[in-house]
Image (cartoon, rainbow, N blue to C red):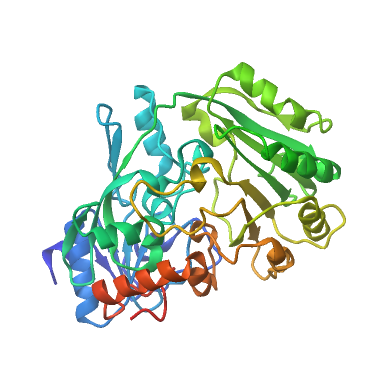
Length: 440
């Protein structure tokens, strides 16, 4: 055994079961081995160990986006590789494979800087960014993948490669947007930060009976808002459980989420038409330090079982809103915990500074669902006539997610990613997760 595999665990070893725990409980890894990686050298040793035995390799940092259990393979746990370094002069952050967004937000805030983070501070930085990265600053500054400047990864041959726009440019293009397709294990990522210290943002929760007027008003509102506004609306059916605030338990509510990179007074003016929809159950939209950005979406903080699915919409007209209300609004048979629309456009629609493989730029909205196990995919099927035919990789989780991965890419990008897969992982070592199954 390699000296770097001192943290190799097998079933029955102390700590093995605890290492498998992730945020999404819809599926559980049952690997032959777990490697508790603390460095790129540990990852390299794990990949060589697996390849030498013909075993597949899976990776887990936080376990938010499980797509396929690492059954019978080697699971590389990167949660300990969570170092975060901010260079305020260069406006960059460099993070390890296990870093979470909350760490980066906190490290950047003292310098008046912010990352292109996700809505939850608990989500892993690397997986989120490789899938594109759609967050509260998206319309103002683009996708998180747009800001990546360097990646270090271990490929299937056990080599450690530093990837930049000028070095391994093919991999640099493929990783940004298509990085979940299984080219290797990213152990370090460097990306740009943006000069944002404060936001006007938060959430407004409406009773379910106002879902229709809210969605129609929000649809019209999104047609004219400046690029500095990023917003979404979620129809929520939260369980009647003690951990859920009493006013949200066991009922349909509509949650409007707002992030405006601009003055509070202008934000107040912009949001006024949506506040006028009707009496709110709660309203937390305000001027806030960027360090409080997690207050906008108020994502769950405790692990739970869920399927996550989505489609990208080319448009959202009045007919589309009525169709969505019939599928997920008041009186519908919807059993999804969450049905969410996120507004795209703005910087999210602009070409990447360096070519990438992110195919959601031509969408107007994403429509995603979060569902308990066993709930069919009826909402997205019903909304397919308004879809672009594409999905967004970061909103795919649970059994079946890997099968939908090819639908995240244009035909040209899919061909490019499969060629990269064949070149860098001809033995299909990284075949767990969102990998393109027929690529080897």
